[in-house]
Length: 313
Image (cartoon, rainbow, N blue to C red):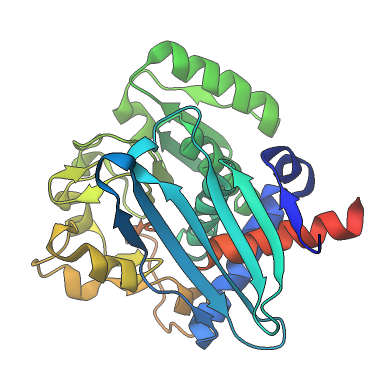
């Protein structure tokens, strides 16, 4: 067998969050250069049997890769679900790696969030607020602290006990205090960087809670009828950014800014990472990042894990 089979245990062993952030940073540079092929994701509705969702992507050049991520959206909340990521050599078609499990996706999304914070937030950001203490909240927090040194971290969840447990666990993992906020407002008001990573279909914060100069990562729902941040947050932002205009277009009229004057202001993250975006933010401007999942990022991250395994084990 000429390819590697990678499990969640392998990912925990061979991939750190700083490595994942660096990989995503390089992938965004490829996207800016036009050497990352990143179409919108597609799906196949199999009626009662399920709904398969595919994200495909590839990179051109000497180390060309092609691949895909696939999962059954019908069972997205099942504790027994798995996802599959396949990586092929773009020059020969040889299968390089298969990743089976659930851990690569949240790490990838967290790392993308870290890249957004690195390039869109103020470099002097000292207070981090997090709404949401699920798997996405965990990896977003890991990535945020990989790119910024925060003096204070506050987290909030509607489940107070879970919030306290999460804060205790992350305090030990990050080796710095993480406070469990008693209200969402407490986690938001002083934040220089705010991450919202919930599954809430209704807004979890109010726009007038936001501090001038804050950067916000919107990880959870961002649609007209299903949104963790309402349009008033975007209206306060001087800069609106997404990782993938292709996926925004695929969302169509359902995307939160669609058919509003804000929609034309939405720009991609890649030019900021590549240094080709000339715009500089002021200390008072609010920035907002809509995380949708740039295609191809799962493939490049899986390829990195395969490379780490091949050289270290």
